[in-house]
Length: 266
Image (cartoon, rainbow, N blue to C red; front, side, top):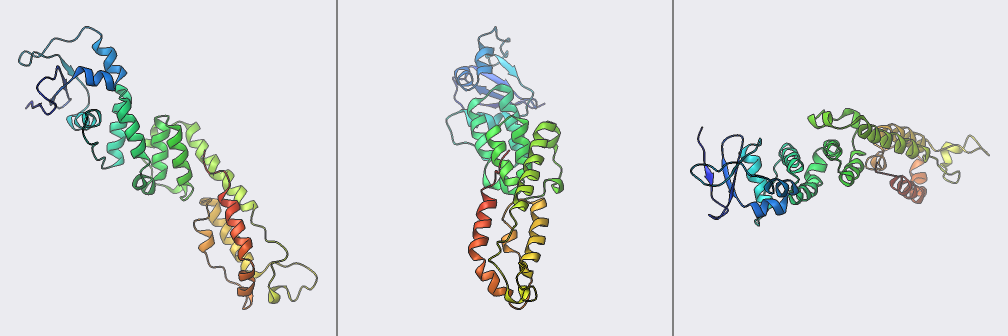
């Protein structure tokens, strides 16, 4: 196997990290120790024998060179690397947690909540956050999952690593918010349609547009308990319902606010 030695961090490196694919990274004990309590403790113990050619201790690690090289970019004083996918992020975060790299963990927590990942798969972001006990990130992701049907999302490997408790919390959030939002779908008696109410003098009859809107809204809120969709739906009514809808503008705005103000995180 070809072994390459990365000297990019200067010639005075005093320890070598050897990846699972045989790549040797020449690094500094002081930087690793400052970045990781794990390495700080390890370097306080008797060290393995040095490489015959390098005269520096060689520390084998189980991660490949791509993972180790990327983590070293986080640790050393240089621009943070670009994390290209959630698969890569999970690998980096898992390794950072394993070696207790505090700086990379903090950077990767921010990256996990980047708009591109939250928009791509909020349920997977929630699963990753739950897997690594990142409560704040799990709360943020749980709010974003409200815009999707969690029971119809693509399965990801990350779901294998979260507890039933974490998944149950998400399901309870969706169910509770859906029920509370549906309970708010009540139209006041002063919003009427002349034609819809005409045959029922003295009795309140909801306009036809509201009956249709309520039916569609209940169906939508049952799977996605947010206002993202329901207030853009078109509900059919009678020929005079348009005026009733205009009169209901303030009521609908308040209804939207009430739904938006419902608890939205685990």
